[in-house]
Image (cartoon, rainbow, N blue to C red; front, side, top):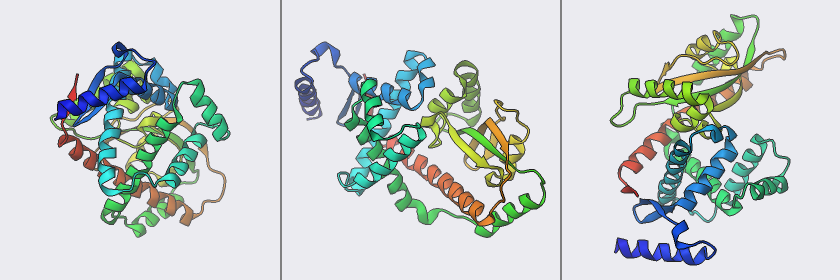
Length: 310
């Protein structure tokens, strides 16, 4: 039965893409009964390099492997989403994700966004689908795990007040991150060694794309500007040692390790509002914990799904 379904899907693809010859479409991966073709991988490469142009510096094989992992991730997440959420009623979520993407890429408006996609030969409907998966997955993780998030608000406020009272000059840092965790069958020391090799060969941003489990990975690990009051004591201590462009050694955190790159820094001159900083710190910690739950759920789903590469 599976072979029949696969055959029918290929025939449909060939009919729909009548400008392509049979030789140009190949099945690359099958996730249960869903096929991923070389066309899907090519489109994913275009999308990933749109998000992070530095990926163009990667060897073609590494870029293709990254694209494969990304497409497989979307297929697995979409399968799970359809069990829990009405996948078709998500226009508002897509609008928010799309707006954030346009803003992060410093694009003026949607018209310019559509023009850029057309110039890069990217199908807007395909991008829309990817943004939908991203938004709905985040919604699912929030609804499923928010009750498990534990935050000590009083402790975070005390930390901010302590930092304010014990340092005269305050700084803001532009940071990027690589978050790594132990993987099935691979020790954390082996992963750190792999990270260091990749840092030397392909740079921080591309390494983040390939190996980081943080939600920032698709943007080359970029976090952006962050007030030092929002950093944990351990991370802040390491970041303060850095010159612009340098990277910390692996910092031990809950469930893994973190490498931080200092992109830029500047002194804070405006008056600091403790409650505003507290809200930002709470959101940062909440997102960190939800990201951990997201990785755990995805690993479990992937482990229980049949994936075949051809």
